[in-house]
Structures are given as structure tokens and as C-alpha cells.
Length: 552
Image 1 (spheres, one colour):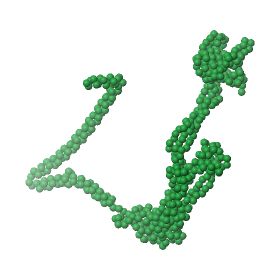
Image 2 (image 1 turned 90 degrees about the vertical axis):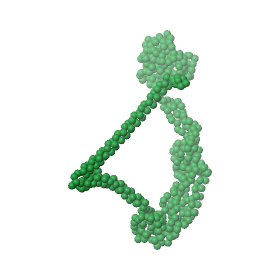
Image 3 (image 1 turned 60 degrees about the vertical axis):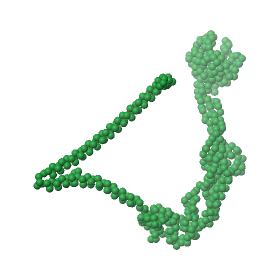
Image 4 (image 1 turned 135 degrees about the vertical axis):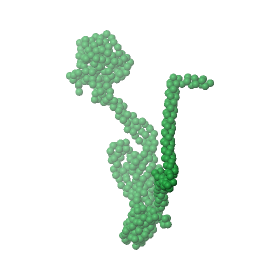
């Protein structure tokens, strides 16, 4: 049953599967062989290490054995020197090169040194130290580091800055490092500042220092009026956005520091609250950008279109580029930052693609397709500072209209007569049909010539003079090899006496496409192109009426 299963699996795998399976098994074998070789090498290293260790032990044993033999020989010496031999043996065992005391000294000294070092480090590691601070000889207490004192000194200066009667405090300090046993409290910078103020002859009171982004603004006896005024301001700003605010906060951080302050430096809480909530209303000019509207500008500056119209007479809904628009702004003592989510319609610029084409003369351009701007509906998180948009972050977007690139055709066709002396003053409906050439026979005349003969070198390129469909590409006795094209407006053009045709019946051609090469086939006496123009009824017309070269 196993053989049948293996045959079934191999049959299902096929040739490619067998090849892959063969190389997979071979790679597994090579990997196992590599692992085995590494294991053998590791085992060999271990054996060599064990052999080296055994050699060292054997040498040590041989040395000890030789010492014992020497000691025994000395002991068996004559009786008159037995005492000396015992002494020599004892000295060798205790103080010899491999004696017990020397070996003990070699190993015990480093171990004892490490133990002593560990004990010293452990003892000092468990100790805590602090800095005892004294100002003008008066002990203040313990602090953790010198930076705490300098912070306290700065706090004292700030608290005295608003006092009119406060005397200058001397900062004659001294520091002393001491072991800290936990019996007294480590002082913070604020607590040390209180102690430094207490020793001054100043009337003090417990109050709250108010700080804005770390800068001292004054001291108040009660912070509640300030906190309430700031909360009302944030609520008012939030209401201006119709309740769609994600977050509203002050740009600066407001903190309160409780401590001792000179009585005459306190500020009325409501006065400080009024200063914090003060605002100044004014206007400034905004330079409109591309695609700006009265609604986008109103959203950018947290105002309304009606307010913009009040500030600007005859303001259109869609702004022109770089138009000046007067907008309202608010400057607050404490700037307020608001973030809100909003759905906005944004426009995407289209690209302009320039494509070279042989259907236009060199230097001429033609708009093939107009560009269309794309539209996206985006959910954005907008950040305002005092009502002015400062940033926006796109959270999600839905493509409403995809942008369409504008396409411009750039002419590369250089078909012109050999000489500027060849002038044809037609309407320019058709391009010159040959790469070079000159007119050798006109339309009409005594022999009622049905077209325009253009003499050119054999194998010169012949171009389709306009877009159309090839009705016939073949040969006959009179025209030789020729091409007949029906154009989109119903007119026909014919190209005869070609040496080679490069298009075929029913083919679609564009202006400037190479359709044949100048030749001398059919009823012809030299290399030239016989070019005809026919109206929708098949009537031959003068080609010169539809060509225009060297006339401008």
C-alpha cells in the first residue's frame, strides 16, 4: 500500500514536481551533513580541552610525587644529618615553590581583597547623604542637591518682586555634605523658600503664586476666581464652534505654587483673572489663494460669510488669486487652542500632459483634452489658535471626482517643400503631403491635369494630409501604386505613383502618418507624387486651394 501511495504522489507531482522534490531532499541532506560536521568539530574541541586539562593535572601530580621522593631521600640520610633533612623537607613542603603556604597565599589574597572591596562598596551604597544648607549662618535644613537651593533662591526673588516694603534678603549660603539618617525631612525648593522668607523681617501670608509657562505673574489669596474665569473663557470659545470642538485649551500652561508671600505683594484674584481673559479685536488683510471662496476663508478665520461681507464691500463668493480680503482677528492675553473635526471639499489640480505628434507642423500646439479638477470630501482635524487656523490634518477622504489630465499635442511634422520659393496660398486645411519636393505640374491646364504633381527624391515619405480611413491601397496601370483616403468631412485625397505602400485598405490614419513612399510607378516619367483632392461627390478640386506653405 505504501508503494502504491508513493507512485500516486509521484504521478501527481509531474516532472517539475519531481525535480523540486529531488532538490529539496538534497538540500535537507546537505543541511544535516553540515550540522553533523559542526557537532564533530565541537566534540573534537571538547576532547582536546579535556586532554590539555589531564596533561596539566598529570604534570602537577608528577611534580608533587618528585617532591615527595626528594623528601623521602632526605629523610633516609645518615643519622648525624637527620634533623637537617627533616627541616629541609618541612621547609620545602611549606615554603617551596609549590609549597602549601605559597599556594594558599596566591589564592587567598585575591579572594580576601574582593570580599573587602565588596563590603566597603556595600556599606557606602546603603548610606544616604544630603546637603545641609545654612543661610546667613542660620541652618535651614537638608536638601537632596544644590539645584534645589538655587531654585528656592529664584522663588524668593519672584515672591519679593511685587513687594514695595520688602527688604533685600542676603543669600550668604553654605553647604555641607552629611549622612542622612531619615530623622529629618528633605526640603523641597518651595519649602526651603518659605524658610528663607521666614527669617526676613517681612510681613508674610500664605498665598498662591500664579505662573504662566513657568513665569511668575503674581500672588493671590484664592485661585478659584481665576480658575472660574478661565473655564468660562474656554466655554465661550467652544460655543463659537457650535459644539463640534474636540479639545479646547490654553496654549500656555497655568500652574499655582502654594507658599509664603509678602502681604503687600498680593493681587486681587479678580484683577488677575481679568488680565488673563482680556482680548483685543482687530482686522488684517488675507491674501486669497487658488480655489479660495468666501466660505473657506470664513472657516479659516472662525467667522461667518456675513461678517466678511460686512468688512469687505462687493466681496464675491469665489476669490481671484492674490485677492486681498479683510478678516477679523482676536489677540488674547492667554491664546486659546481649539481642535475640531470638519468635512471639507478639497480640489485636486490636474496635470498637463504634452504629447508629440506628427499630425501637426513643428512648433504648433493643439489642445486635445481639457483638464478636469478632482474633488475629494475629506474629514479633517483643524487646529485654531485664537480663531485663526494654524494647521489641519486629514483623517479620511472619499474621492468624489477623479482628476483628468489635460492633454496637449505638440507638432513635430517638418514636411515642407525643398525651397521657400515654393509658395502655396491656400486655406491650410491640409498639410504639405511630401517630405520635401517641389511643384512640377499644376492642376488643370490644357491637358486638364486632375491633380498636383510634386517632384521629390524616390523613397521620400508621403504623409496623410488629414485624419481619415483608407478606402483603397493598391495598384492600377495609370496611377501605379496609389492610396485613396476618405476624410471625416467626406472629402477624398489620392496619392499616386508610389514606389511602396505603407498602409492598407480600411486602415485608420491620422494627419501626418506616413502612408507611402515617392516613386515612379504607373503612367509616370519621373519620381514624383500625383496628389488629388476630391469633394464628397468625387469631383476633382485644385489641391492648391487646400494647402498653405511659405505664404505667411
